[in-house]
Image (tube, rainbow, N blue to C red; front, side, top):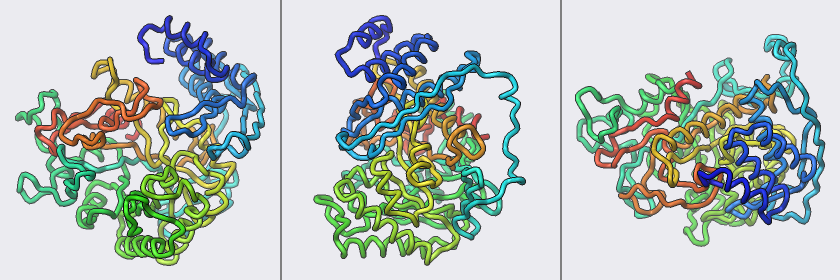
Length: 519
């Protein structure tokens, strides 16, 4: 798939002993890489028509429905290549019971639709006027709430104005520190140069000439200022396991206009439950559920009156099951999460409640078990063309608004130059954000996107378990520039050779892509 010899790659895939739908999809990717966009479109559309139920398997052994991905690819390519003059209409593929690991219960319902020529008048169609639309539903009555219009579209409203989440995950970990080794310190307290200021937020600088030194023309800037310049309006963080410093976040909001999505892990990584890592949090254990409820209650009571709070977030892809059993008992997990959401609303009617799930795994169960959770949030890494059917699936199963709690791409790829990988990372982020925009209210998509959280601000060197080494090994396979996730390279900024961590920042192309899109 990632060979530089595209002719050889095409022949390999065109004759591969794979299921026809899978073979066509990867053949289409090779054609797309070769610049043969029309031929790639034919490959993808052939999957929709002839192999709508075709599937593959992800690294995590969850089913990947190829035809749904093919439809997303077609829309992406037509959006990126308007000169072709086509659009896809009346096309839909539903996989009933497709949110679990069992293929035997799947029912495929397909509407292949058609490709039609666009015309000039379609581009002149007027958009829906907000002042003429009535509100169908309102979730919450506080200064932060949600509205659904008669069109079915959703918006997050903050202080009576629509708010689009343009966020990053912010955790500036010093090179050499690791939570796995118990050496990670709290970035909200770090003052390694002993000048009375917190290092990452206020003392970081941009290494413009990439020489791993702070030259005279590279003054201290601080991450908060850099994020504001990029267009960030929100960061995502958790109140555990480290103490959260209110004064720091107040300054983040008051001086830089950046809000906070505040989360509780809800037992993921055994945090908040009192369970041991192995076997992890048990969502059938009443004592552990009591501990988690107390953890959330403490968080809400401590922060609910802070002006920087945007809304509350529960969990972090708990359905994948690390140090918890939500993957084995998803109904029990979602029912408990719903109880927690009700408790939050009793304590704080001013802010919505969201969940952070893992892609769309068990989405149907979430839709049935968690009516009191206002927003479906999920970590999703699907590729440089966006998030595919996710928006439509959430609309069909829950009719809730959506935001992407995590998405991103490594700035490293085996066999490619630094410049090439930075470009590919930036393109991944550009395609992801364009898809989010396309699915916002009153656009051409599902109308339920509230924004997203780019992962992440800064490379974290501990992710591959050698915190003093910037590892280049692939940790698992996926839709990334060389086919692997290099989890220590996800930052929109790098830390150079690590010698001046946690102060040095090397801004990547993806930073400037967002600066252009978000400003």
